[in-house]
Image 1 (tube, protein in one colour):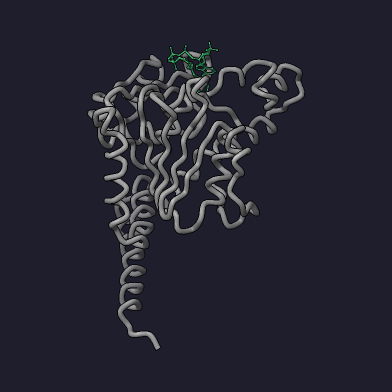
Image 2 (spheres, protein in one colour):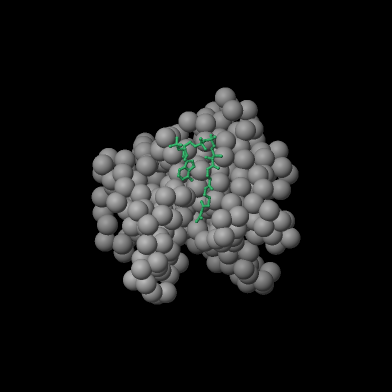
Amino acid sequence: MTQDPRESGVRELPTEEDLTRAGLRLAVEGAVARITISRPERRNAMTGRTWTTMAHIGQTLPSDVRIVVIAGEGDIFSAGIDLNMFTPQGVDGERSIVAGLAEGKTDAAELDAYIAGLQEGFLWLRRPDLVTIAAVRGHAIGAGFQLALSCDLRILAEDAKFCMKEPALGLVPDLTGTKPLVDIVGVHRATEICLTARKVGAEESRELGLATLVVGVDELDGAVDDAIAGLLAVDPDAAVATKALLQQAVGNTLEEQCAAERKAQAGRLTALVESMVPKG
Ligand code: CAA
């Protein structure tokens, strides 16, 4: 499960140097944090360091941040994992995924822990105290698609293209994307999308429910700003309680969900009444 940021022990946001090495930019302004995947020379391909740094961002965001927007630099969201991660040399001195295995130095438990650490970079985007938005231009391949799937909303430019490339490379999607994909499109369509590794364009993404909204390329920034304004207009505590409630609904029976609704509403009503009582 996602690590509780208050228990992580990490207090400071990543430094500019950390962010640059991870291929990320970060801008925090009031209630809105904007993360940009920024390795344009590699078509915004990401490395393990990108995801551990994203986890670090999640652990250290100021508590008044309510919205996180993730976008790619330029005309592409992300080309997915940096394929050099699968070479013995790795990327810029960063650990290669295959080198340890090839040399017999990495055992199953170590590999499991390593991948779990990478998954943390995606898991925190589900936190109920945040609403996360993927603003997608161009390709979102493999890990890029899974990153977009980790967000609550996906606002797509009409040139956006999703692709779950992993099976074509002899791998499986392992960066937390299979569950939201199946939740959104169902096992049948998810199987077809993954096992053909085909590109799913913006219009089809809208039809399948993968896109919250599709807009013209020049309208993407404005559409994201409009979404942010709408989200910030809602009571923050009610937003947290409602997202938590909706997340439970997928795994709950109707009876369990009704009970969860009653409990959440009791909390909200109590808070509203308390806010009406004159202080002192
Ligand atoms: N890793 C490393 N380098 C990459 C890269 C990647 N994923 N994607 C692109 N690049 C590099 C290219 O090698 C090229 O470098 P040079 O200029 O040094 O030759 C540069 O970025 C520009 O790439 P292209 O010329 O190919 O750019 P394009 O605009 O014509 O095509 C693209 C863009 C469709 C994204 C294409 O580059 C592509 O298909 N990239 C590979 C995508 C891929 O297979 N990603 C891995 C998916 S699997 C995953 O993410 C998760 C997992 O765990 C396995």
